[in-house]
Image (cartoon, rainbow, N blue to C red; front, side):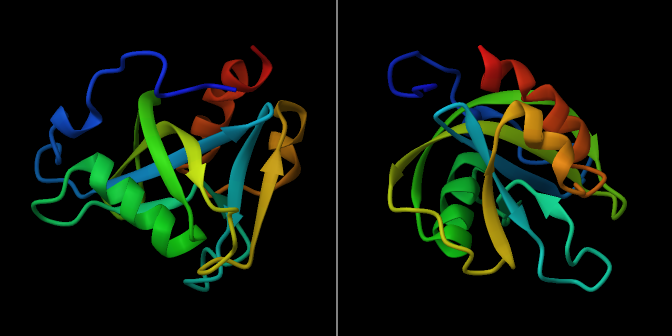
Amino acid sequence: MWNVTSTPQPDPAALPSALDGAQIVVGAAIIRHGRVLAAQRATPPAAAGRWEFPGGKVDPGETETAALVRECIEELGVRIGVGGRVGADVPMVNGAVLRLYLADLLAGEPRALEHLEVRWLSADELDSVPWLPADAPLAAALVPHLTG
C-alpha cells in the first residue's frame, strides 16, 4: 500500500490553483491492496454511466489539497491523506484542467453518495469500465502504482 504519511511529499497546496485562469479540477487515486477506487457518474446526462476518479472543482481561495479532501467527504463519506501527483495536467472539454493525486484512505469505507456506483479496480481491470475522456489517460498513468 502506498503510504502518504511515510514518504515526504511536496505539498500539493503549494501548487498554483489555476493555469492561465483555467478552472482546476482535482481527482483522488485512492489505492488499497493494489486496486484504485473508481466512481461511476450519475450526472450530467452526457457523462452519466462513465467512470472517473472521485474529486471535483477547486473553489476560489481553496487549495487543491483542501478541495480533494472536501470532495471525498462529500462524494464518498471518507477522509483521505493526499500524496503526490500522477501524470500531467489533462485539459477537459469545458476548458478546465484535471489533476490527479495519489491518496490514502484514512477513515471510512467509500460509498456512492453522489455517484451510481464505486468500484475497486486492479491494473488489469482499468480497461473494463468506460472512463470519462479526461480520466482515461490518468488511469493508464496509474498502472505502475498498482503493480509495483
